[in-house]
Image (tube, rainbow, N blue to C red; front, side, top):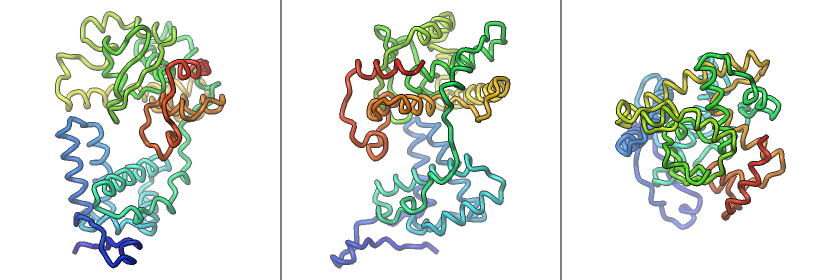
Length: 322
C-alpha cells in the first residue's frame, strides 16, 4: 500500500492539485543514491544510504512504500523514540534527522512532495544538544601543544586539525584532495567536494608551514597531504574509502589527544570547522563573511543577506582566529 496525500492549502482553494510526482520514499532514496554514485559523489551517497537503511530498520525491514507527506511530526517523534530505545545519543539522532531533512528538501526540489508538508518547521532539530564547537582556549590547547616528540600519527593529527581551523574550517575530504595547484600566491583556492562552491582564502604563516612540512609527500603523490595517492586511489570509490579510513584514524587520535589535554568535549575533524565559525562569530565578525569563508550555499541560514565580500574583508576577519 502506498500512502498518498499531496494537496496544498493553496491548491485546494484554487480547486487544482499541485503538480506532484508520485514517488515513494523508497524509490526516491534509491534513485538519489544511484544518481550520486554516477556523479562520483560516493561519500554523499553513503550518507543517504545510511539514512535509508536506518529508516528501513525503523520500518521493521520493510520497503518505505509511503510518500514523503507521511513523514510528519508524529512520525518524527516515533522515529526519535525508536532511536533512543536503540541506545543512540543526541549526536547520532541529530545526524539521522538532518540526513532525513536533507532528503526531504531534495524531494521538495524534485516536486515529489509539497513544501508545506515538511515537519521540520515544527519539529526543531536544534532541540538536540549537539554542540560541536570548542572554545578558543581549548582550540589553542590543541594547536599549541608540543608534539615534536610525539609519534607521526599524533603530529599529523595536530597538523590536520590546525590546518582545517586556520583555513576557513576546510573539511577533511577537501583537505585530502588538495594539490599544489590549489596554492596560488599564498592563497588557498579550491572547490568544495560537497557543494562545488569556490573558496578563496589567505594562508597564514602556520598553515604554510604545515604544507611545507609534507613537501616530500607532495612530490611523490601529487597531493598536499599524506592521505591520497594519485596512483593508488584513482576511482571515486577508492578515494572515498581511503578518506574515510584516514579520517577515522585521525578522529580516534583526536579523542585520545583531547583527553590528555583535559578537553571534555568530543573532538573530531569536523569540530575544527564548527569552532572556526563559532569563534569568529563571538569575535564580532559579520556572519556573511564567515559564511563565505565556509563556502555555505544555503541562503536560508548563514547566507541570508550575503552578497559578496572582497578578499581583504575575509583576510581581516581571519586574523581573529589566534
